[in-house]
Image (cartoon, rainbow, N blue to C red; front, side, top):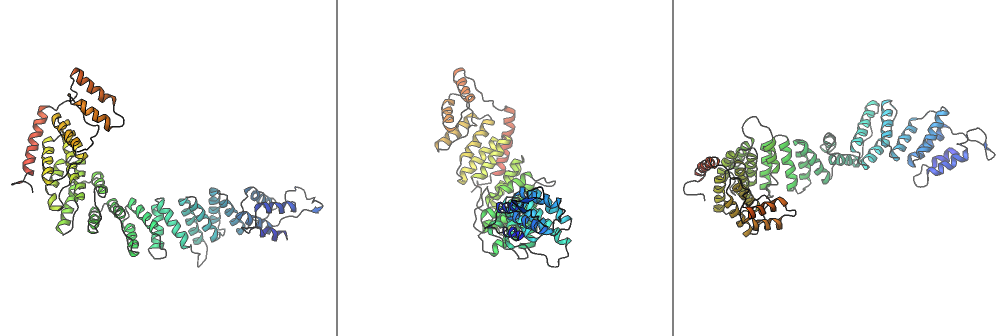
Length: 483
């Protein structure tokens, strides 16, 4: 009778661990001697009754009571059945003792003790609920190991909901091998239809690890359900190809974006620039190889965006190959019919500053005016820095005055050396949150004592740079001027 009462408390709505304690107290469970309880004889628990208590504690956890039951069974030489061991592990999971539960589960698998399928699923669901994706896949591997050890001809299958949760958790945690395993075994055969959000998480994981096959298969699934592919998804596919060192395919995706009327700007092509800049290549220049590929695409009738050419030029500048970037600029109109834009010239101005090529920068500034490209804040900033670092203070001030006349704000990189420093200092204080005291001190020193903190470049360096820039200018300037 008491065994049936104890088993009834396994009900999730009516049973509690407190009710079990009350019945055990009535049975005299905690009486050490074999005497009577309130005039009634003490009732001993058998193996079945202990198993019922463990089943209740798997639903209504109480680790102290479970420890008492296990100690009681040990003292009475009562064997713990396979079913009871499942209840013990389930109770540990309910108490959030995940390490103990996984250790006990592993021992059960190693010792060929039957583990119920519901226990494996319960463990995975609870681990996923608490963000333990790696441990959930560890349980999945234990389940596969247990099925391989057993002689069951038709092992139980996991539900689609659990597979979907495993895929989503693995992708969000950037677990590449786990994500790829679930995708190839469940999604590719058609057993699982993941949500769009899960597909995008898988695409992110594939992008980070350069798995082209996985990324393209995600695009297949998204296309089949008529999902609108955005710029963000294309950018991840570009990054995937770059991670796999497939430069031609990455450039092809950029051109596909243009064909799909999606915006392609410097942000879209930044992964391309970073790949061209950081990737080691033993042969020819990688930026030039990318530019040649773009030329081939244009010759095949594809529309090449200027941003892609700019990324190649930017990588060449970052690698201190200004002449290579100039060659790309000379051939830009044959690759991108849109022609150069403001960002194109900003990139070239950066290279001129790095190489102290003021005359070349002035040539590009003239080109910029002829082509009608509107300068921005970065344009003036780099022109001012080119003039300053080449010792042309008057030119830098002229660009600064032009910048302020069009209501653009400069940076805090300028430095004055004559009486015009007073007006510049005022603009500096208004445009910078925390002005440096050293800047104000330099202005005071100039006004009071006539010090000039600008160090001009040597005449020898300037003359050699000017000759070289004039030579490049003659090469760039076509007969009759550029249209």
